[in-house]
Image (tube, rainbow, N blue to C red; front, side):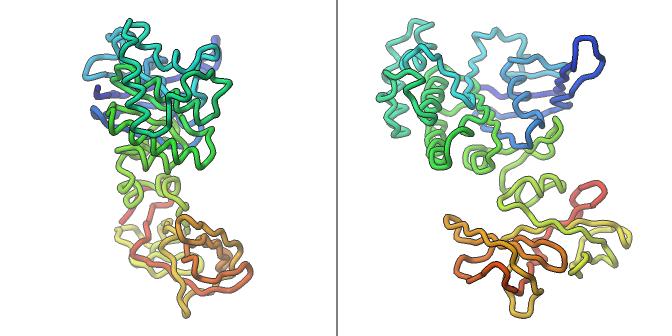
Length: 359
């Protein structure tokens, strides 16, 4: 295994051969992935996640900055000695090869075919997926989930220092995605390896990784454990982006150390902002509750979430839409009036001009 260090890494792509214009896909990124750690990266489409993965893999050279494997510059390590495995969204299997040939390719190159059966058997035992049953099939005979299982097995049946995932389960349905996530977690526990995981799925990132990075416009907004990102977002973007269901956002001002919105307020804010400074309050749907003398609102939509044992209720209140996660046991119907309140101790406040956390 290796540790990965990025020092002020930037990647620009020229828009045309004869143009001075360029797109900055990765912008001055510095980070360290510890040996054996999995770092998952989340962010909106086009934020630079996949480009960063390609830079770490050595598939793209950085425009500036350095990438180090165990403190050795990546470009100084011969390709065959890097020990990098990749799992792509499509599986990227050889169409004319049976799965057995795909999985054993690394060992066949090194004349170590005798090691393959034991490795495959161990992977099957850990995951319970019956990998042996897939080995005689070609890609066209495999389902989407089976292709990804073969792709993961191919990556793990070699001598790895670093394993890179580029949205590997995004083409699978919800049930298969959950199953694949569990299988991969078991495999990485048995075969620990430094990993970099690009995904749009927050559940995947939380389930699999040690830390999560939130990217926007080629930069990391914040890197930390999922608990840290959830409870202590550094800015408004991270607060609104991370967490399911998404936070409610209310614009208001500070007066006398208290926050006031358009229709409600009077909540203490720990800050030294001047009166009438614009401040945004965010609060998660889980921190609303019903109260007989609360604020009246008209129910617009109700979305039951059976697995999580709550219903997501959208309420119009004084021209603002509130989204609340309320117990399934509460009988709530569209068009009805409910009385609700929030727990101000759970609210987060952000400078509306800079987006930075305050208080």
